[in-house]
Length: 321
Image (cartoon, rainbow, N blue to C red; front, side, top):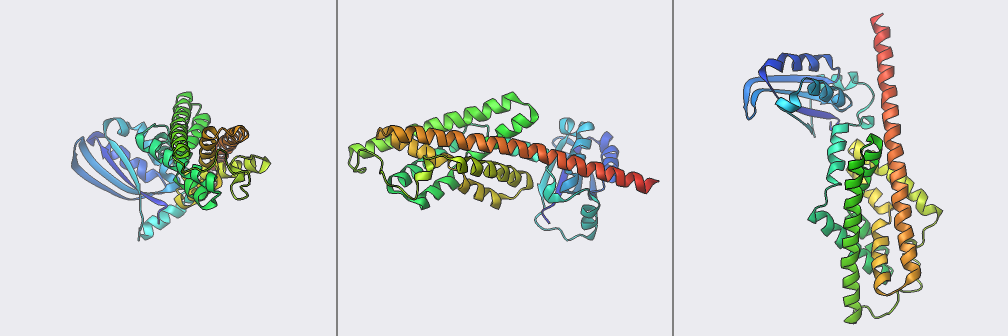
């Protein structure tokens, strides 16, 4: 029953009736509870409700219009189990389907995290890049998959898509900055490790292996690389907006950004020029495909949901007549 969300709002007492009225007007809201004077910081009444995911944007917009986000507090969380006939009826009354609804505030918070350049982001990216570099040296597709799953870069890609969608250049810049600095640091660390391994004899070659049938795709972009990146970008954005974390793992395994970065570090350390250019091209193809498809997916989702709401409005008008 995760498609039902739990709303918890701290409301100034003079606006509690207005909040309850807004919830009663929303077809997807039910199980409304008011605890007068329960909140201490900030002071106010505690209002709780169960809200169908497809009605979340409507409820959040109504609470914002009342200034609850400024003078009180608004929180929503997923419900893992809800055994309530009234909640099920509310979900059926709400427009569309929960899987198709995008809770824009939730998505905004998710992608905002991808624009923040943290030590953990750089650490995960550096570890993933080093795994990919080892995979390139020993032609191991298993390690390539491990590097793909470990890489944290898709949140920043999704942030770029959302920034284009919302026309927010600052968000785009922050996400690009996180990606550029993160990959630069990860490649530099992996490059130093590769040089050290070469000098100490861990890497027993002066060049990358010429024959790598299992991992050559990470530095040999072609039309399929771009097609896969398009599909992965669309699937990744869908998995984030629909809350399908299991699908996002499949996206990680589909794109070769981190493997290309690992191969680039190896190629720089071993001075293999053709693979330097191939790895850079693979990075560019993957990022371009994911950003194009991810942005297009957001526009399509908005258009589809607007059509659902228009259909709901026409149906309500017919019932009223």
